[in-house]
Amino acid sequence: MFSALFFAGTFVVKAQDVPMAVLQKGDDTQCFYGSGSFCDACKAADHGDIITLSEGIFTAPTITKAVSIFGSGADLVTDTIAKPLTRMNGDIHIAVDSVDGKPATGLYMEGILSDEEVWVEHHLEQASFAKCRFKNFNFYASADTTMTTSQMCNFYQCRFAGYLEPGDANALAIHNSVINDIGRNTSESTVNVFNCVVINTSNQLQNAVFKNSYFYAVRISGSYRIHSGGSKNNTCGNSSMFSNCTVHLSCSAFNCLDNYLNTNVNKFKNVTIKVSMYYGNTSDGYNPFKRSTTSYSDTNSYELTDEAKTKYLGTDGNPICLYGGDYPYTTRPSVPYIVEKNIGTKSENGKLKVSVKVAVPGASL
Image 1: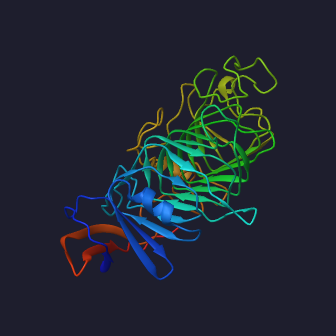
Image 2: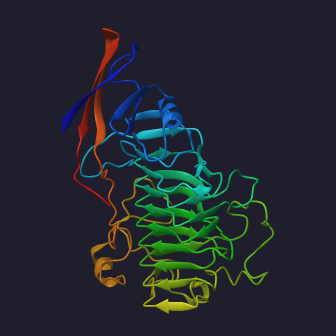
Image 3: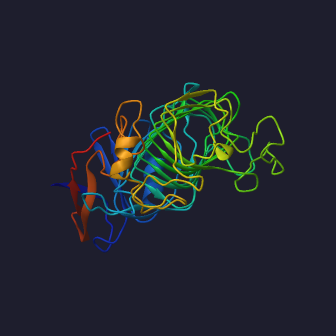
């Protein structure tokens, strides 16, 4: 660990209890305090700046710049190192500005816990989200609008406690994440799901590539959110998009595990490409994990049993799901993060002394 000193204008605050956002603009550093500090930092930021957040509850911002955002953590179960949480209060809106008529790229968000909505208000390009815990992440500007577009956006080691709506995605990829519910997309978009645990998946999710992942169920009509352009009257088998509640026939699957063995409920039976598909050992559903996966859990590590680790291997020869692949699941921050701050209660010569202790975990993507 190491300590860093920052100086700001006159401000009186109780040490340790106030959320803090640090904005780094090249060699310059600005500190903001209070629940609105994240919003203030976002307003003051330019493309390419870095925002570091302490633990605490922050008012959720509207993000208009392609910045890098690092929270203190989002894991509700501590990993091998203990760390505090960075929580959002309210909906996060992502509306990254264009630069000279071209989409700004490089938005990065890590270590954020959101228990409300995330809305992508317009086109998002080359953005990454890592080690975050989201409730609902929507590639929609709002609940009553059409899908927003994205290109080459990635999620790494995240959890989606509610659902992920992929929208009109060009090469959207989800790596080593836990997804309670993944929704529908457009017929032209592409979605890649690698080394994930998926509790529910829509049979309206098209052109998806599933690799080295586990699937528990396919959603039926009425059990998931439908935005404009959809219909709650759709049921399995009543249109060309459905076939007995299976994964959409435009999808591909490689070394994935379907929890059912019974061919009558085989969710992948209409998938166009199947390579080394695995199936559970009972018609009632098979659980290869040390804890049940019949519903989403923030506290489940989703670790395979010792038997499953040797039985269900991915395309890389390693066990399927979260702890295999190119980005084995971990909640350790990949960059230094704030673990302690001391804010002076008296100013000296018009300046306020702030001491920040930062931990360097030594982990990376």
